[in-house]
Length: 164
Image (cartoon, rainbow, N blue to C red; front, side, top):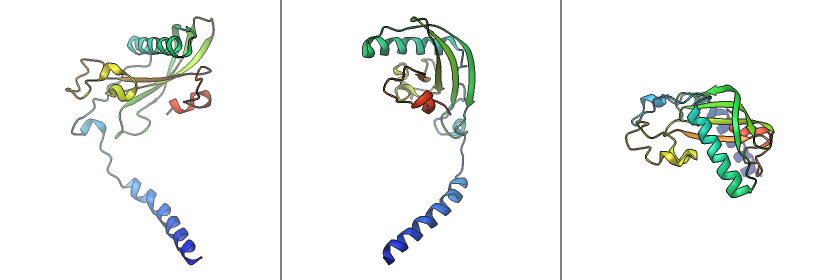
């Protein structure tokens, strides 16, 4: 019983002190690292970003789900966050838009664009991300969720996990 009490007291003390240490952690902006980021991330309405979402959505729908759904266009772009996780994390822009589908429905698309994510960001175009970090090849990763079509609930209800 004494051991359980002592362990509980230690756990509570650790939890009480942990936030103090977390706040004192030096925050190095991503632009000042050994392999720095530029902080330049495409805009929410970038044609490149729209094209990535369209092509990856079509690939997923036709090859995996067998629906053949496609986006015919987007509108009402809105930035909902930029570097919302902090200056020392990978630069990301969080966005929403309305996507028009071939079935005539309009669905909300929640997405984020991250700098220099390469294949880690779900974008295999950036396999050469560490070869100079020049963005000669688009090294941005685009991760998106289509509200109502997240069939395996990877992003939770209403695409919550794709938001800042």
